[in-house]
Amino acid sequence: MQSISRAIIATPFGRLGLSVAAEQLTAVDFLPADTALLRASHPLLSEAERQISAYFKHPNFVFDLPYQLTGTAHQLKVWEAIAQIPAGKVQSYAHIATQIESAPRAIGGACGRNPLPIIIPCHRVVAAKGLGGFNANRNGLDWLPIKRWLLRHEGVVYAD
Image 1 (cartoon, rainbow, N blue to C red):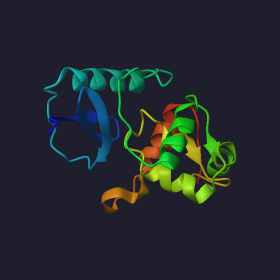
Image 2: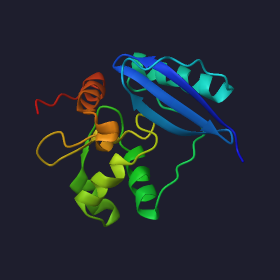
Image 3: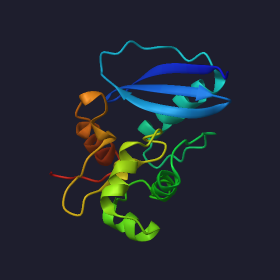
Image 4: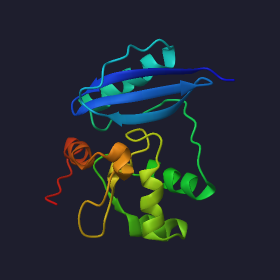
């Protein structure tokens, strides 16, 4: 059984949970702002924290972390397409659907299951008219304020 290492870091909008297994980043989770911090005990977690902090200082920062994505073939295609969207740009669910021969709702579903938000920038995927959803309301929480924060950080503003 492989060992999983975790850290919980502070960000400008709350907390992020990071997980590493088999020397690869496997999860980035948005957590409530009052979640207790957990110091990184693995070198890759420390590097992930350093790179995420660099992104918060410079929105054009390009991540260079070894990671593992686990999902369906469709989800992997969606996440690969999302990974190509540069900082400060957005693409619609419909655009990505056309690009990979899928449907906008299926793109939204894959975005909501993205295990590495920020690293795989699903916040850059928006609806045809408006912001769209974000993080599939995991834990029953509204994560749209984080999507707005990330887009503003990259110079994209949505009034929605």
